Image (cartoon, rainbow, N blue to C red; front, side, top):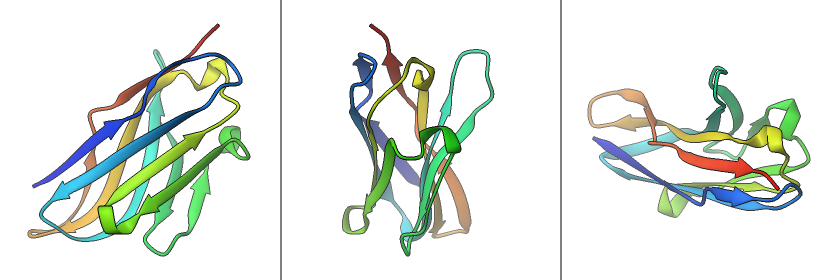
Length: 119
């Protein structure tokens, strides 16, 4: 089994910054990709950013130039640095890991961390 522990959410004013972290642990043989998704009230969950094990990144257009995804492969941890935050960034942010476990390659989800951007 794989566990994901997220941290770093909170309340921030527009223009502020937050850094999300997600640490994966458990029976992990290989991580293929890690990423962040978000879901705002009344909306579908959307991809925010992903990063592969070789460092290729992908961002949704609305966060390009403001958010940066990175990893510490030795710690199986993914980060999301969020700068110049806007009220429309308010959402529950979920960590996702695409990993090979003892049984199969699967996608795992964290419990979510709330980000609220408001003055």
